Image (cartoon, rainbow, N blue to C red; front, top):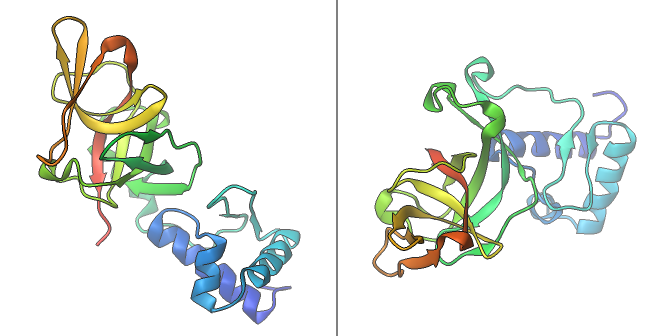
Length: 207
């Protein structure tokens, strides 16, 4: 790569490999920790790479993206790119994630005829859905829809907070959001308090 110092080339390679393996960009702190350098030094190299049009970034977390990606994800022609929006709580609800962390790739056959534009991915934080095989750190691919069947695993907005749970409509205009871990309690809300953001379609786990 012409115009780059050896250290800049190594940092660019690290960022590219991190994006490919993790499906999201590294933070400044993760870069600093990998190279055993100060964050101020990382910022200096990133600014240089921006000036040379090798990457772009904003003040948001994990916002680094490559302007000239050298590699393609494995089996790209058979993979579907899905935006990774952040972490979602699988215990009690947490604030709805707003930052796009990167992207993940899944087999298109797993989503059927779903419009890819209706898909997003979230990283699970917590163990409340473990008995259904969803563990802390897993990535879920979600299909945006407001139409849900009883028993579907959904991403739901409750009082401006998001959570992932099994969805059960009850009599009396009530909704039950049920965990899959006896250590957590089932939560019941009025239907007006629950806005379904999507149904979990694919589970991904990095080993």
